[in-house]
Image (cartoon, rainbow, N blue to C red; front, top):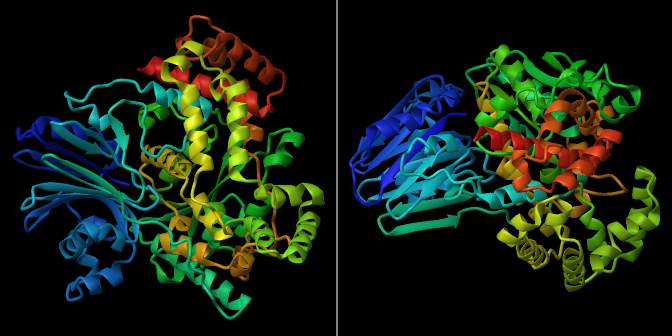
Length: 632
């Protein structure tokens, strides 16, 4: 977790070095271990460095090599492979930085270099001979990259606040983003809360030159190839190898290593795999970060408490555990600091847990924290296999699996058969027509409490209908594998990773996600569907592949904790006065966008039942919007 900035004057004016320095300085919180700037003519690049890997200790950015200059926030994982391919094997590996590898890859493959890189990265390379700026972002969008582009200027940075150090960049609120947040439509991978400022989508690169701006997607999952191995055992062993490698390369660190530990299948797999790899590193313990809820009422605690499963992992030894008391945290307790780091209004009711975890990591000198996001999507629960059985006429196998699934989940057989079978046989045009009819009768903007005048101004009904059409006119997902790929391409995952990145940046923490390793993702996508779901068991390959690594209680666990069981009542308990300031005040700053009567009704429902999901989320979103609007 470092920071990058850059300016390219497309009108050939020289770069203002003071502006470039101000941009870089505004991101000191992302890199306390130094920084630098480089400027020549109409181009300038900047960097702030947070040391994480051993090689980063000798890395100085921006870096000039031959006729190219690079600034990067990157961790490259296929180092051994690249060093050999690029002819760098005569050099000592520990003296080859990740930015060295990127520059050499650019020299070898040009603009095709991002698809050769495994890891998390956001970088920009100024190519002097070709007078162009080439930028790229990793396949999942783990490293942030925002930019501004006009006929006269291209500017980029790791965070929006750096762009506002440039006098020529206007600070205009993007009201469509406000509407998206209130309607909870967060899949757009480019939009921000400010007009003219955009995010470079995950797995995309762009080229900027005088009179040219080109963006393209450089990588996507192969959704058609199926992996064929000899036995269940071979598949399980292959999964274990892929997971181990994904964890191993994310343990490359010059500092103590941490892992989130909720007691679920994903975080526990990472923590336990890291523990088995400790003999190959200089570290002798894994710091784990968990949440306890000892003071919650029993009715709420049983929905959320995972202490039993966490302790099962810790019993294996060689962990340094850290617990935060989730039931004593205020969901908006650090709102002002959080909004400074976020730059935008955001929808993430449980983000305050992350804030406490990263704070605890910093106090223990842990700079690397691994997280189980998004194991659910990468491994896949696998239920689309049931629809595929129907599609291929395997009715007996479908019935057998549905009965097994009902025994495991205690759900009625007819309900499961409908949800994971016959419902999928309804033609998309019929779904689309029904959804459009429902939207016409009860528009999403109205159900979200938005002002009619505001909705009309932004043409939100037309906007929602356009999204529905896109949703129901996706390429046909004819197999379970196609559905699996689609789940990994959601802009919502990129959004979640960006929020976590900015939270971690407040505490000198770099987040690493083994389940976002593109090799592991492709492996899981390529699996036969019966390796993901069989005999009513979801995520089958993960349960088999971690045998001997995870305690059986966790491998066989089917439940999940509901963090909202604490967040929703806690928000009301701690922040009633602030909520009422925005929700019940007819002159509140949010009433330009939201209906007062709607908010008052939602608050009344929330007040009567703090676990009311819809009302609680509406109150949370409106309060967050109000705090942000007051800030700006």
